Amino acid sequence: MSATETRGDLLLAVDAGNTNTVFGIYRGAELIESFRLSTDVERTSDEYGATLTTLLGRAGIGTEQFSDMIVCSVVPPLHPTLVRLGEAFFGRRPLFVEPGVKTGMPIRYDNPFEVGADRIVNAVAARELCGSPVVVVDFGTATT
Image (tube, rainbow, N blue to C red; front, top):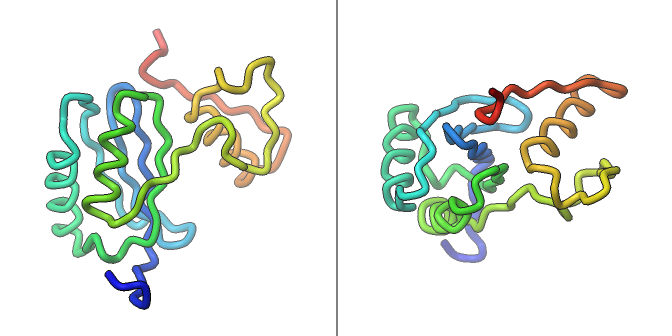
């Protein structure tokens, strides 16, 4: 793609959890499609990409329609695979939500680097959607 060509208007939002990785396709604030794959750190970026492009194609969506990719992950070993997926299939290096990313909401915790990306995203979304104060309960894989 040349510097004068433009990309589409879709955002690929990736939520990589311990059990599942969910790919959400957004146009603005509207979720227009989503796909859920089992999280597997042994799966290659090509395997994720082939599966995802097949699912996107069935929904009538091409990879050229994406302008950005953002990742919220609690599975650090998967990060290099997701970077390669973004670069190879979507022409974008993904933005990872992690401590240090400017969200507009301060993290008042003794060690902010111990706060998982999933908790950061949940808190920011809850405040944006509901205002504050707000309580968020996320029953993820680690719940026993």
